Amino acid sequence: MPELASLLEGRKVIALCPEELGGLGTPRPACNLSGGEGADVIDGRAKVVDAAGRDRTLEFLRGARIALERCVSAGVTEAILKDRSPSCGVRQVYRDGRPTAGEGVFAAMLRRANIPIRDEHSAIVAAIARGRGH
Image 1 (spheres, rainbow, N blue to C red):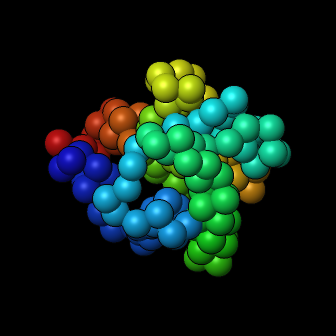
Image 2: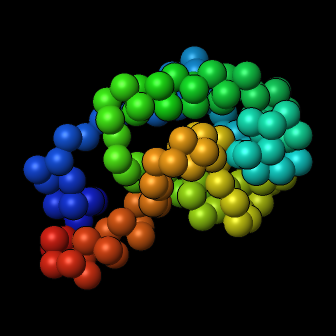
């Protein structure tokens, strides 16, 4: 996405993946939230399951905590996340097998830490509106 590259130009960027940090690796089976959204997973009222039905909640929580620690240590002032992800979804996530409004686990942790979050599409639109994207 050249627009996103333009938006990030001149900024200190920390690229990370909470799912990788949680030990899930790449490639990995698709996962989705079950019974709620990211905040519900954090609070123990929902879980994350993969396509084979395996509970991946612990990996998602571990990865989100590690990612949050790295963001706080680095002094992150804003996060641009991949929407629809069970970790990083800002406006939408896959929940119970279908896309729906909600936040992922890492997005919810960032919000609780008062770190502003945006999905990649709204960040690009904002950059274009400010004349920073092409």
